Amino acid sequence: MKTRDVNHLHTSRFDFVKMLGHVQKYRISDLTMVPPVAVALAKHPSVKSFDLSSVQFIGSGAAPLGREVCVEVEKLWPKSKVNLKQVSFLISSLGMLFVCGC
Image 1 (cartoon, rainbow, N blue to C red):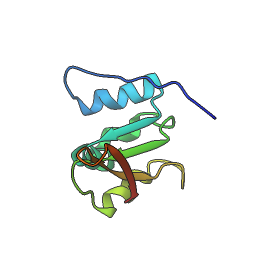
Image 2: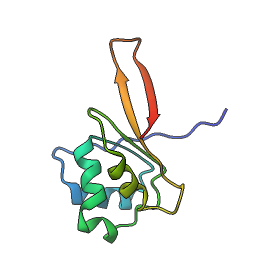
Image 3: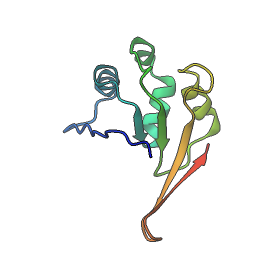
Image 4: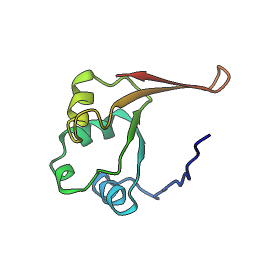
């Protein structure tokens, strides 16, 4: 069974550009975000200034996310490297985690 180390980065206040810097500096591989952050990732001009090549997985939850935004986010990486997933946490139903294609 393959395992990997998992570290979490927490900040006291959210700042989108700082988040991009942390992804680059700490080589973050997995991102979990709410839809407004995914929209910023798709549209913010600063995104292209950062090396986000370490990212392998992006999950977005808490609200539906349009397919157009998913496509724009996925275009930031070479074809098929990153597939943005909609994540639904069903806490009241056995704490299961479901990952569905966007």
